[in-house]
Image 1 (cartoon, rainbow, N blue to C red):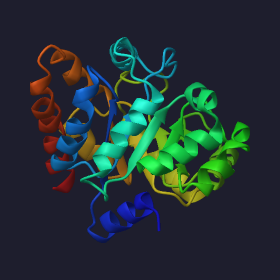
Image 2: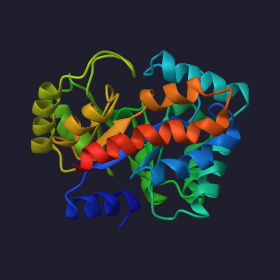
Image 3: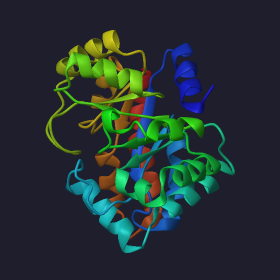
Image 4: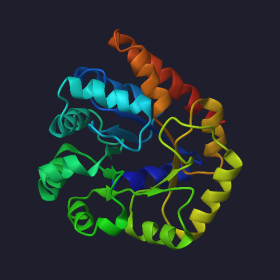
Length: 267
């Protein structure tokens, strides 16, 4: 059984939901990332989504776009991100790590080279925002052969037919984008999320993580009542940006938000 599946099974047995933080690797400097990953686990994270810096993050709003820019200023490469995961695995062999980003860096490395390097580093899943399942026919078997779950996005506008297709193509969990727009935008409507999550559950057999619009403990708690996982990104990356000149403060700033979310979700 893969780590992501085992994580959701454990949480289900404990009647708890997954807290899934996202941060961009190498933001604001490379040395921050691995200690931050450990700090997020200590604060209650169940799965870590680690962003691979990319020059054109089209699905992301200004907050994460700027995080990519900061990471790229220090030449954070895909191989650097894999090296960070490998160091993290030296002392944490349980927490699943998902690489989230865009297809171009994977194509540059080559599917087989990337998948093997990711497996060797201890990566558990890959979410490529601009790779829909219809265009992933070459990629999926390679990732699967190296034990990597391919996680796909479901949008508020996704048809029932396509939700079923995505559920069959993916593994690990489905990422439901709760808002129409980019990361960090708009205001969450939990009733709408609940309705869509129920529809997705009837069409797909994977756990459902909900992201976009989770900003605080209150919204995390509300979403955790209807989803299997809560994904939080921009709220954390904002804290990293605010403390970019004092990196030693980042772990406490991010950990404080996650601890509050974890406590609210567990109530």
